Image (cartoon, rainbow, N blue to C red):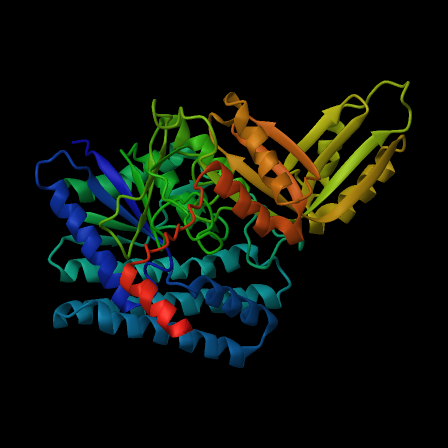
Length: 505
């Protein structure tokens, strides 16, 4: 029988220690009760990340194994074990559940030690260590699912930890040394194979009324090699699994209430957005908002599966739903959110041959892609002029490539810049919104160095030093005006007048 399911994803901060894991278990148990209440609520499938900081520990462990620093390797492994044993002591109360959990943790940690030794051997033989490193990095999630499953079981809910890889990926490219240590490059999910594997692993559990607790972040190839989806890729893995199961909704439980109109650390009156379109959320992520991983929406948007962002520590809040455009919600004109991306460089190109045929901008961006410097925003383009923004650290390599391959063009660069993005699906349909954005910065005497626009809003390039001031003025003008407190003078009574006169006398 086909079950209507939802995917609940819990990040590293949500499962950061034993107390937090018990909070996660309570949320999962409540979802299970709701699904069985006959209110057409979908059955939960849970996806979890490693405990906060564990993936970094595992990558350090792998590096020590590769470099032969055995003392550091042993110390890191000891700390990793202790972290999970400490959590295990908190997450369950029933004695038989504690014994079962400790046994499962020990067997998994023994498997980790075997993979570390295999990694050491590969490194000693001078072979590429990428695949073995990915195997070591996957143990954070394999340990985490055991803790979460034990905590949920301790509350009386039937669960099963799935340590096997659900996501099937393409064969990875070996690390050529240009990528950070431990990153498996080029491993992409295979949708059909992933769907088949997901149903094979999860459907039998759902049929028995058992809640699956699955690993995020990791996958395997058809030939059995362990892969990972990249750092901070567990949100992405949750939506890959959600799409494979054709779920009703993916909920990302994290440590914030949802998606806000701007960074609350910089602007006190940032507001919670109840709904965003896929395009708005993707653009927010591209310009620096940290709530959703940039790739998270790729698997679910074509299927119109909504993604909800909720706070693990304030589960009574409904959070933000990212999904299809809803009439009357996303059809509004004007900005929905303001974000900023700093440490950028503006590259401007002008043809020195004004009478020759203009170059195709595609050639420029092909060169940029070749040196790994994808443009963040295109500010202006004409036959003999092009300006675009890249990460500042990538500016030198792209300038060198352009000067080498495009001799008829003058290349200039301005550094230490920031992009302030005013994002909203109907932004440019309101002719006053872009004008208000530019006027807000002019009022604060903030220099706008360049700008570009799309149907999702306007991007204003300013100096890094002015970026926070620009963010505040744009948010105040376009989203949430700050209403000053008005202090009314108290009417002067006859008695108080007499008292004042007497004191003056």
